[in-house]
Image (cartoon, rainbow, N blue to C red):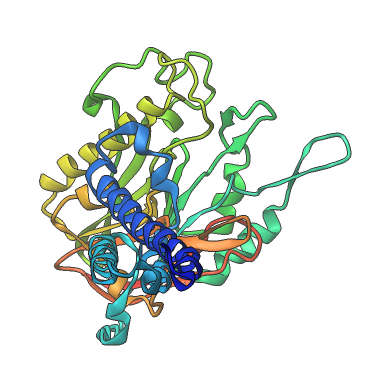
Length: 377
């Protein structure tokens, strides 16, 4: 005969078992996801979509799931262990910058170089249209913003316009650029623009095509008005800085995905092609850096968050300058009003000191923050 007390106790026991399964399952599932991410990011092109998750999630998710641990009786210890393992595995890709608590850059010497790197968001072509659908340009506002940075070297991306069909075309008014920066030296390759107070001794676009894993028939598209936009994603300029040559790499890597599902596999808009192009860009950079005897500054919009493995395939000679930032979680790009991603980066060779490094709000001109740095080779 079943006791009345046993009947009354059964539902709570079932609820506890259900709660334990949910807590343990959630912890295990998150650990599996993080392990898969560490294994597949940057290796499998079809992992590009999970790659887009906010990096902070790799810290926030296991911490939030810890509230479920009390429900996991009698497996609370195992549930907590799974979450601790997930936190440990996800911490290196979460974009957290603990070095800001102790790192203090050395004061800048009088001859230090100021650098401003920024994705301009289609130059002065604001993403707005007039009554007839024509794009609204605001060059005055753009140049005021650039002059306010008072940099010696500008590494600018998206020096281009887009047609209504989203085809890239060159910026028409290059003469105004020269008037706005009298005495400066200018290098352009595709969408990449470097403006320097120092003389340019070498200008070298790094073409990705020799470094691709496979050939793409429409790279660049035959009808493109700007072929280098598709094939040159890093521009090297060697500058003569107070009698010493210093190399500045200005970079803007392809975005990992544009839309899903991907277009036909024989087009350069395919997800596999984008993966291939991004890998090839890093290989082209690595090859050039390996043969470069000069001090190096590398900056730009890499379309790569701390969670993406591609960031960790950059040449070993390049040192991440993140420690010089004053934020425990640096961000440079927002989506849906949420500033959760960092896509813009600064690296230097070990013989270059970074005395100051900060993100500069874009003042409504771009979806990317600018990067301002003070360096000395």
